[in-house]
Image (cartoon, rainbow, N blue to C red; front, side, top):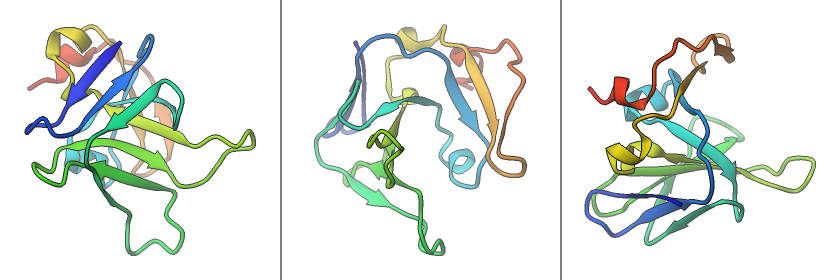
Length: 133
């Protein structure tokens, strides 16, 4: 099990099983937050516990996700989809930058162009340890 905590320790997430590759996205939110995402579904392998507030983009008529963050220290914990897929599930992702570095250092990074093309980009061989600084 992988675990990540906010800076103050009030909120945390857990991910059961293998995190697989994580995603670096360049959309207007992700690039500002500096997050790396690992995915599953609400009430699946990911659990978020402790107090959280959420942010949805006010300019969007029908936002597709909300960002969950600690109301005390403001660390971004996760995002949660606001719509269900065909199987009735809601997608969710946790910010692996909140995990201990040694627990996620070797996870490969996939890149997603969420700013312009909305496409996956070719993997370049980097892993989390390459993006700590």
